[in-house]
Image (cartoon, rainbow, N blue to C red):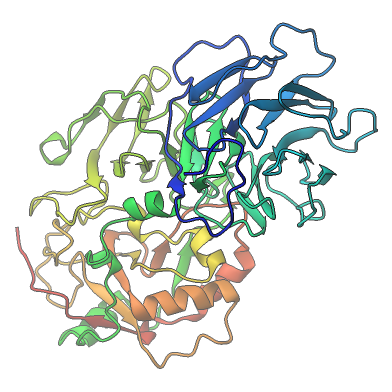
Length: 511
């Protein structure tokens, strides 16, 4: 690890991962937290409040603040010097306040701005810094260079903060929904974009000795992102059925009957997108920190449900919206504990201080363990829902590395692992069992479809899709996201049922 004040080269070998050093979560605050910055060592960080009040964690020290000084406009962010023995606070008009060994190299405080400043970051030597506005416009001072911005882009949510890379030759910008934009030599290690979050992101930080970055939320909670932390919480191990390449698996001997039962002449349908009937279209997920307060949940099918309490925010998004009469799934993901919590037919009670649900299941994402045979989950098949969703960030990155989830109208009273439950009384062997895996035929040509659908096609050929619930035939599940292009997703309906074949992934189980 580099000594305080030393410049750490980009090819350093002693980098540490971004980990949590504490937060203000659960502590009453006079003013909300608006920014975060890390010490060069990465062993600590500061949180700054709207009034300039400062909270130090780990090896972060206090060198003064604007907390007791009347301000024309509120503080919006801060940045540390290269030594870690000083920092700057910046106000919404770009005005700068320096503490410790922080020097002044200029600011936007005396200039008229089209958009308010919301964040800042410093260069490794501390001889310069950047200020960023809500539209992502970048203002560079001292030895800070320009590497790009979102200033000309249309954003779903405003930019709220930034952080510089250890070399100073790049930076990240973060939006209120946790979406991340990387410039120069900045690398992407994950974000909260596309996942519903209980409190908006208000800023981000990175350290000179750190591979990764932190995102801070308005309640003072902090999320850490780094290569190893992402790997430590993959959605199930690499050898899990959801993540298994079945492109070379044998065709099931009953494949033709299964496909005919579902409807060879039917078409795929994207059961997700932007908004439908005034609610987000798809099955939403809310991500929570490990210390999210847990609330009791009572279940209709309590003998096949994992008992609570569950870490469900009071405002957790419900599939179909708060007034939905459908499945009303609630999906809660805790990245830090690597645990998935899922509810079916979920209803908040007394403002979300407790919940009722038809059924519920808890999944350890580091484990391949199945639910007991005969048990349901929040899905009829006893499967987890989140691992099978088409998610925007994956499609935008050009690759989906897991199987998908889809529904059929009629199933038989049997299941194939990893499913553990049936939802039918039929013994018709032509009907698909829960957990049946279908694969898009290798020779099917998707080249005429939209870029988004081509990515989905590739996943369907490599990983396939699993029968997860009774519903409309060929409906493929996904996460809602305002960034989806609904017209592009409609190209999925050009793919007929006859383009699929069932693969043999194991024996039938009957309850």
